[in-house]
Amino acid sequence: MSRLVIVSNRVADLRKKTQTGGLAVGLADAIRSRGGLWFGWNGKIEAEIPDEPSVTEIGNVKMVSAPLTREDYDCFYVGYANSVLWPLFHYRLDLVRNQDEAYAGYRRVNAYFARMLAQQLQPDDVIWIHDYQLLTMALELRRLGCRQRIGFFLHIPFPPHDVLSASPHHQDLLDALLSHDLVGFQTETDLENFRNCLEHIEHPDRAEAEADAFPIGIDVDDFAKLAHHASDDVLLDRIRRGILGRAQIIGVDRLDYSKGLPERMRAFNRLLELYPEHQRAVSYLQIAPPTREDVSAYSDIRRELEGLAGAINGRHADFNWTPVKYIHRNVAREKLASLFRTSNVGLVTPLRDGMNLVAKEYVAAQDPENPGVLVLSHFAGAAEQMREALLVNPYDTDGVAKAIHHALAIPLDERQARHAALLKRITEHDAQWWLETFLERLAGCEHPASSPALKGPRLAAI
Image (cartoon, rainbow, N blue to C red; front, side, top):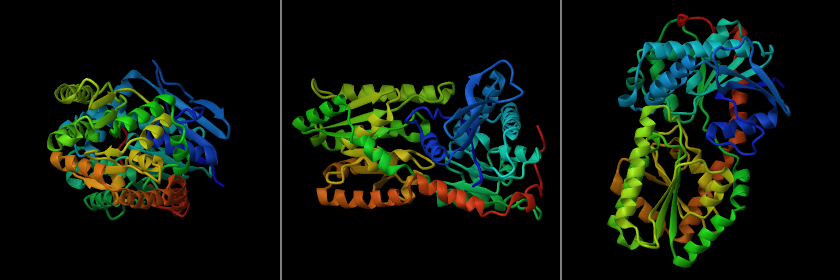
């Protein structure tokens, strides 16, 4: 079997039993089961970049990483990846900050990472590059003479051409993606958007790359086991709510403008206004760990969310009832699992999301005999698979409020039927299915040594 080489912006700590974030969880499980090499940024900022990466062996996995300089971090990560690509790919043109200097830094870091990785490669390696930070890395590897099979998987949405074309470098990015043998997306919508974009850069001799949708999954059994081991504080809270006859709604999202958190807060407030019977009978727990705090848009949304939570509590709270519980810190994955299991409604309403594994984790954590109900945005990639959830438009405040009200009132037999259908689908398309399906497809691609991988127009070096 060829060695698997995983490439991502950050290298996860495999010594941790649990990871945070869908990409880290999925890749950690994959590399542990198969072994191989994992390459990425080590999270450190140093004055100068080294000639060679650092290498650490953890079991059957070789962890290879390299630092960034402050200038490269500011241009590559803050300036381009998260101030251009992230908002662009999430359809937020109002937040895109195009700067040639940032794009040059992005290209420079991708080339640097390619040089660091190339030193570690073996001729028969299978390379799997992940996500928007590394769109041009395969091109740089090809320039260095790498002929291994290279696949790419995008964990976030891929926008339509009229959105993507707002970037002055969009044709370069599309062309760079064609340096892969296989390009994977979360949904059929993303795949169709990519294909339509390619129609606008047709060249008679451009490189070919296979593309398909491979919706990422979770380890369903593992997460379900975590949900059975509730901590004392979670158990006590469940008992207390049971005695008082109170339901709990839960949302778990990184603090990001793509997640629709202010809109969700307003929908909960509207629930209490439209349906007064939920006063003192339901609470909303929102866990929103910090992320990308060095990007100004994120500090703005934090202030807005904290203001909304305070305003709702100020308007509706009673001396023994707090309607909104807002937690702005990381919570251990095992505790999240038990919180999901003890919550009556899972509220997952992003404005745009590649997949959203929280939706799948909420379903996996439920008690099949008395499951909760998932309320899911139809702008989440998960909505393509999870049709038995209550699908909502996150921009429709009253519509989301009505869906939450409906979720709280659904009888047991219907809740069981919806949950059984959702659980079956996420079990059939779990993390192992995602891994095996993508890698089998990549292995079947025409080998790059004999393919036109370097034909056609190519980006100029920066």
